[in-house]
Image (cartoon, rainbow, N blue to C red; front, side, top):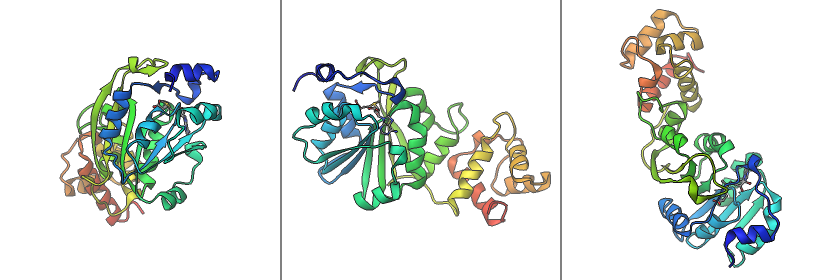
Length: 279
Ligand code: SAM
């Protein structure tokens, strides 16, 4: 097959910045991402953002089945060429944000998400799997390096935030590799990293998921304020109530939300739920 760039050129394809189109071509890197994802002949892989199909092809060589979503229909003739012979790969030309995840999960059974995500929708796409994904075993996603650091941050650091806590509740999260901007076409302004989130390891249960989400939102509402003041503001508690609740989960006076580990935030959310403060 021709070099990917010449295939795109031959089809008169023009890159669309608004869709976050920065494609990968390095075969070794593509194979490494597939390996990071732990894809094997039993895996159904779900890709978001087919692009010119380079990662799709690398996945199809290892996986049982690949379903890939692509918003840009002008890639159709390119993909007909680059994915020819990949009989276990299927491209759906659809905005992934509009896809019914429950119906898709019913169709796919257990699956692994592997994607070089369009940067402008990284967090909403990720949060869909974290909050709604019932059959998702793992996420292996290329994101901006600074975003990757936020996903995997530890409490008490500047990078730690609501997304970190939400991810940690579902599984274990680690950066598997950093990827220089020079490996993308066209070249973006930032470097990237691959993050692997394993939904089958780590993670923890909470009494109520909505309560956890609301607690996390409250904890990070204003990073300059103490957790006590954020709880008072969000849940309309008296100061005494807030002090007692925080003492019950072992939080020191004057602590800020970002100093609580995800597990401690889970304990706080369970208490707020059990006391009927969050319904
Ligand atoms: N997977 C390819 C690769 O690694 O070379 C392309 C990655 S590129 C960063 C992201 C791709 O996602 C683009 O092809 C873009 O058109 C597509 N895309 C953007 N928004 C999307 C959406 N909401 N649903 C499906 N695909 C989308």
